[in-house]
Amino acid sequence: MNRRTFLGNGLAVGSLVALAGCTEQTLKAGKSQVKSLDELYRYEEVSLPVRQRFELVEEGVHRAEGAEIATPDDFEAFLDEHGFAVEGVSEETKAGKPILSLEYAVDDETGRGRALEVGTVAGAYAALLEAEFDGEKLDATLLDPEGAEFGEFTVRTDAAERYNEGEISAATYGKEAMKELQST
Image (tube, rainbow, N blue to C red; front, top):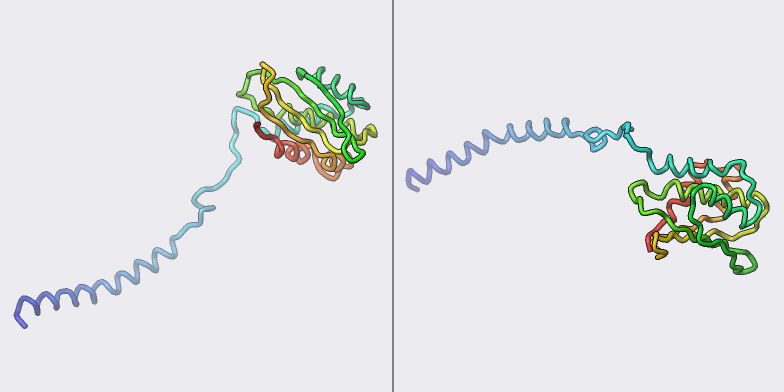
């Protein structure tokens, strides 16, 4: 073995021995400093200059509290009073139970979303069911100002009845309806 190879191998072995302890210490120190994602990114309620959509849907549900809505015509009149451009309310019977259908046009102000509208429709439907209307569900269709469909949602009778019986809050009931909102 020549001198150069001997010195090269000796330096390599010496470097490995010298770094072996340092690496172990570095790994141990690193493990103790690992933070969870929850620690790194804490979720905090922030004060925003706009209202949250679930606040709006809850407010919409509350609009119908105490309203006298006993028939589908009363349902339509209630929505008209609250600024809805109702195109039509109709009943269709399936399996012996009526399904209420609603079509209404929305303005072109898309920046505010649909949460207040969905909540208002859901609240009015709950009031209609409370007045002994026996419906399976409410299917709502959203129309743009030109009359073309662009969205739909369903308000389920079981959720409305749970709301009427006090089993769920207005916020939860409104969220149930919001989950059904979809574009077409």
